[in-house]
Length: 512
Image 1 (cartoon, helix red, strand yellow):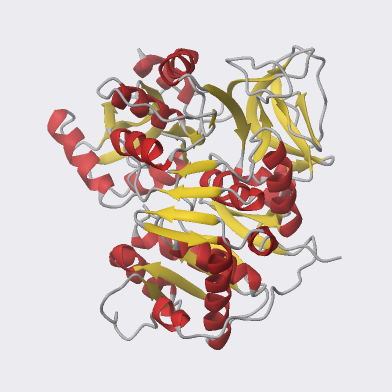
Image 2: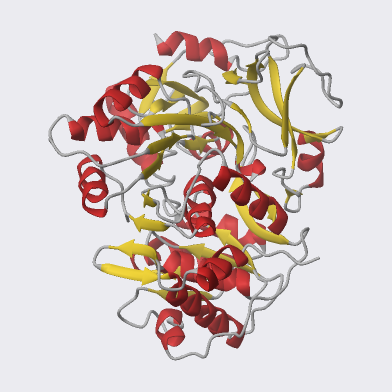
C-alpha cells in the first residue's frame, strides 16, 4: 500500500491545474505550476545526493518557497523537519543534531541564526531568497528554475515518517514527534470535511506560521487537499490581515487567540469587513468574550478546537455537524477516540466516568509514531494503546470536551508552547541567579506570559535593574516567544515533601 503527503498537492494539481493555489502579494501561483516547481526542487535535492528517508530541515518564512520545498522534499521520499523561524543558533543546532538532518534549507532573511546553527551542527547549508551567494552555499531556488522536474512522487508506505515536528513535555529539551504519511493524510482528509468544511471555492488567509503544525497541516495542507486558495501572509498584524482578507475576499480564517484579539482591535479602527464564512481557533484557550465580540463584529462564527503536535494535530473541534458550545473544544474528529483517564495513575490507563476531571487520552489515526530516538519518552506517553496528552479535561454526556488545566507546567504564550525546564536551563547560566522557576502568569493579549521567579546569589541585588538585565540577557539566548518578560524575586521557594518547587503556589501568588 502506498500513501504520500505529497499527493495532497499532486492530486489537486491534476484535478484543477489552473486554479490559484497560492496568492502572495502580487504573485498568483496555480496548482499545476506549484506542483511543477515542487518537483523541480525535488530534482535539485536529488542532484545534491538526498533521497528517500533523508531528513531535510527547513528554516523558512511564510512565502511560496515553503510549500515548494516542503512538497518537493516529500515527493522525493525525504522527511521534512520544519524549524521554528524564531530560534537562535544554538537552538537550531540542537534540532539539526537531534534529528540527524542531512541538510538545512534556509531563507536569506534567516541566515544570521540559520547559518550559525548549521555550522555548529556540521550540517550542509542550502539557501533560498538570498540575492548574493552565501559563502558558496548552493542557491537551490536559482538551481530549481533550470532543473527538469522529477517525473512523479516517490511511493511511501503508510508507516513511513513524513515530518518530524519538534515539541516537548514540561521537562527536558524539545523532542521530535514523528508523524507518518498516514497520520497527516488522514488528519488532513478528515478535517477538510469536518470541522473545516473546506471547498474548492474557499479562500483561506494563511497568517499562521507554516513551520507550526496549525499553519502547516490545518492551514496549508488541508487547503491544498480541498483544491482551495491559500493567501499567504508573511508576518501577521491585525490591520494588515484585515486589509488582506477584504482585498482577497477570504472566506475562512484560522488563528490563535492573540490573532482574534488583534483583529478586533483593527476592526475598531476600520469600517471595512471581510466576507468571512467561518473561523477556527486553536493553540490555546479562546476567551468566550473574544469569541462573542468577534462574531458580533465580523458576523462570523468561530469554531474552537484542540490538538497537539503529537496528534497530527487535530483531536477535537466544534463542528457544523453539531451545536457549537463556546467554552468547549467540541467533539472528537472522525476516527479518533478521546477519553478521560485518572491523571495520577502511572503505567496504565484507568478511564473515568462521564463528567469527571482527569487527563485527556487519545487514540486513533492521528497519534504519532513516537518521539525520534527517545523510546523511554515514547513509552511514558503511549500507554495501553492511548496517548497521554498531559492536559486535564472533562468530557460531558454529549461527548463535548472541555480543557480545565495542564497536568504539568507548560506555558502557552500566544499559541506557542514554552517549556519551563528549557528556559530554566538557560537562565541558570546568568551569574546573578542562584535558583529559578519558570511559570506562566495571565496576560490579556497572549493568554499567558513567561515569568521567571528568581532567587539571587549573595553578590547580586534584586530589583528593577536586575530584572531588566535578566530579561535582556535571556532575549539574546532564547527565541522571542520563550524569554521571560516578567521577573519576580523571592528569598525562598515553596517546597513539597520531596523538595520539589511548588510551581502552582508560585503561579497563584504572582498571578494576583
